[in-house]
Length: 361
Image 1: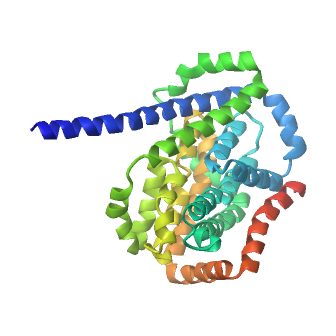
Image 2: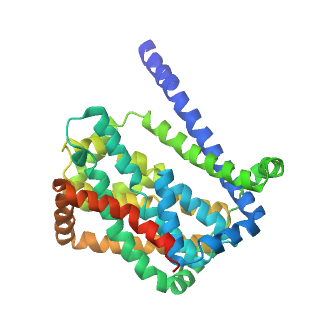
Image 3: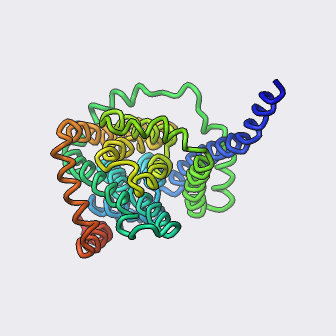
């Protein structure tokens, strides 16, 4: 009896820091969202002038978001900032849609970074092998969100109208951000709107990073044993990708826990592809939450439009999975085995968004 009580107490002491860390990251997240909204609203005029001058075109919005995601290695922060700028009237609906898409096109940077770090820690295989999950994630996300962007951009008015009915019915009975209004107002008044916006982005990034670190302290062996052996079923694998990423709001966690397994060939490429496709959809959950917290029905509708298109295209690839997988496998094998193709691919990932930013379209 005493041993059972001691075991429970030991687990409680071990989980205490994790619970505290999760609560702190949640409070920081809510504070950052409120500060982001307050600072963008206060700085609407200069921000609008800046965006009209440097991010005037739709292609520039897509490229700027894509590059910014590389810099922060976090698409969620860029998506949150985009929704806040839209709510302040600085971005148009089409620019928001494209900036959300750009946050996905650059979102695989974190997976590439995790693979590179795993390579430097172990050095049991080549760099191309260590980063192959990052390369695969780029291929998968681009195969879904490039066509989703191309299809959704001209159809955005129709999609926005269709999802507008859903988003307009989303009303918060409790306004959790209201508790932070005095504090965020004081920050804006004290440091100014420009620095407040920087602080908001840094705090948002810090809250998501803290949550990732909290998740990393969790023993994921049980997760691997319970779920990852089920990867042989494509729909189960896809559902797990959506679920784990949506619940944790962290691609770094949901994909990070499988990077070592994939690199060491414990999980087959054919098994992990549906999981990554699901993670690419689940990652928008926190963006929807932010749009709801900012009470932006139009923002919610635009996010849902991109999520819906991505989901439809993803389901189509899973229905024709054998054909889709052969195309992805052929491309990835060429990239991993031929250094010239790998270098060309990596260069294109940088050159294309820069080209979009520089081209006034």
